[in-house]
Length: 347
Image (cartoon, rainbow, N blue to C red):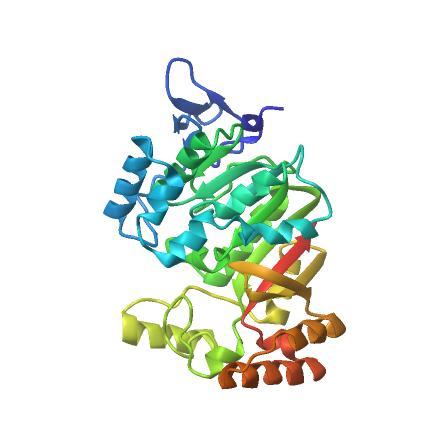
């Protein structure tokens, strides 16, 4: 099956067809057309940019790769320690070894793919990957990277702000890493309902037996109670406040609404069950979901204790932190205060 066969019109749900002698896909039901740039499909009409570097610098980066410079060297030339990891470290998808199936012959959706390191790791396991991001420059970077690596058969979608342009029951694996909380930022309405709707749409496109993997911060992480700024609003204590107070706080300080909702252990499970998922497993991930070196089921207290004992250090602050985590694990409350979660939801 051609992976293009599962691409549908996000407006009416009909299959899209390649238009002859024109770089576009067309819906013969509602007559909508979507620009097709090589394997890049432009679904959104927004000129949206979100990135770790300014847009102009990102465009120069893409230009260098188009000129023939090796993508790894171009990324390194940015002298950005975070991007060295974020764009190049394929261990970001280490959790793939915990999936109940192998990748060969299966399709994965990297929803909000960023610079594509997670999807690249999935490719190493045999998956065909559909990369989707609202930022065109990110999608362009990933497509150029795959071209240099001679990786074929993937699809790249500029979109994700509304309905997903993929057929029901067509995807084996969906991954959202640090994305769910940002979805309400580009849409109007109740952030919770927007997130719930996005998850329902994901549930629809998953095949039976498919898996949804989510990486997200914990709303009630102990570090937030100690004054660490929220990872999204950058406002101290905002995540642990009632939503309406956090909204007032954000409007007063930043002149914008508080819309980047994250969740605690129980609320996160409840959110996924409301979206239709029957089995939801939430894991502790160390050091965090962005770099999942250790992944442990938060209900396996014995295994958690074993790994906590391995985190030996002579630094006073880290020693106190580790002792605190051990105590909370014995009290069976570690699951509620860890920094971030890696969630597996099964259809």
